[in-house]
Image 1 (cartoon, helix red, strand yellow):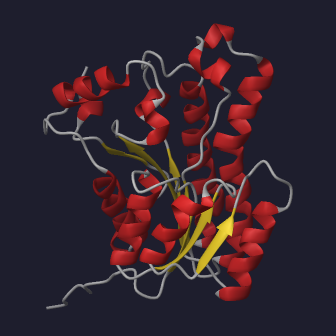
Image 2: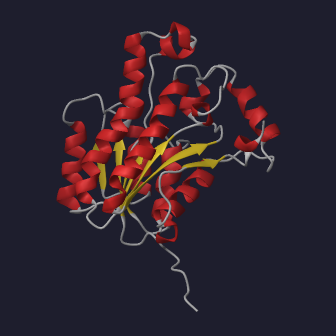
Image 3: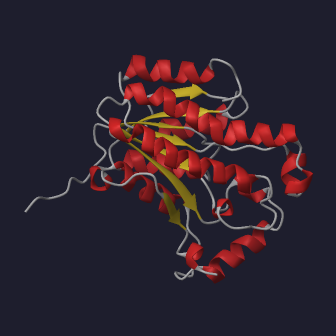
Length: 259
């Protein structure tokens, strides 16, 4: 009988973007990738964020720690150039980047500005497409791309506002990229966690109420944590999920199935 390897991502190389601190979903994914054997390249937003991310990257044994603000010309190219020079190839990319101007996020969708909507779409959605374009040439033997979404992409979550349509576009982008990149052996998934106590989420109005409602709605009756998300995402990068692509994968205790 074949015994599954204890570290099914051994030898793989993973680029993880979007870690802000130890509560970040991206950090949970990075930990899970490392636990299952992957080598890591980790990015941080700017000099202000670096002191929070650098110790985490060191703890995980990341081989690369690189600045990445997707709004800055040249930074995305610099990240992929560094990956190419260090590893020559790439197996996993995790996009966990989202932003909307505060005034557009806190108002209803009707009150969002064209500029704010476009800004949120570029940072939160189109940057993933730009990453995919740069990652594909580094995946000659296939790979897996992940983007972080939320259930507000598919149903109305009060106070999620502008980010609902933006995340819906991100999930649609994952499906179209799965179609375009499938012939290259590259799989693409949107990951949709339930509410978590992250710094980004805590800025949403009535966030504590959202957490309580998620527990009440979930058949499992529990909130997920960043490692639940991390290990489920890591599984999708293994060969055991090699025939899966184009999905929105919910990691929410089953809350999304409830009316």
